[in-house]
Image (cartoon, rainbow, N blue to C red):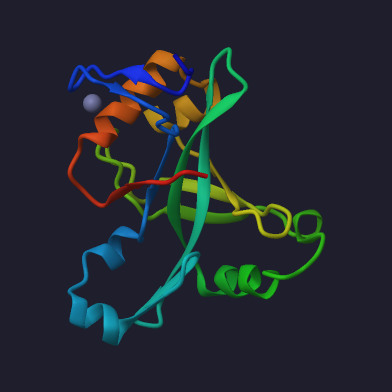
Length: 177
Ligand SMILES: [Zn+2]
C-alpha cells in the first residue's frame, strides 16, 4: 500500500493517493458574497483578492510538519493585509531575489477552518518565497493550529484530518500540488 493511501476512519474505505493538502478557493469574505456582489464589489485572481477597494487578501501556504516523515500537511489559505502590504507584495510579484529583500509582513488569517477552533483573524506573518512560489504563513498567536504548525502532527493525525476534510461539505477543494 502506498504511503499516501489509508483506511478512512469516516467511511471505512481505502482512499488512494490523497494529498495531505487542502485549499480554500477564496477568502471567507469573498465566499460570503452573492454572485452579483462578487461581480460588482470584488476583484479576484488565483492569488490576490480585493473587496470594496478596502479589503485586501493574499493567498499563501500554511505548512504543518508531519512527524517522522519528510512531508508536510499543506493548507492553501488566504490572509488579509493592509493596502500598503498588498501593494508591496504585488510590486515584487516578478522580482528575482524578492525573498531576500522583503521582511515578513503582518497579516491575519482570512479563512475559518471548521476542523479547528475559530481561525479567522488569527495573527500571522507572511514570509515571501522565491519567484513562482506562494508565500508561507506563520501563525503568531496561541492556537491549536499554531501549536500544530510549531510541533507538527503524526501521520495518523494527518490522515484523520484529511479524511474529515474529504467528507466535509464546504468550500474546501482537494488540491494536488
Ligand atoms: Zn472516507
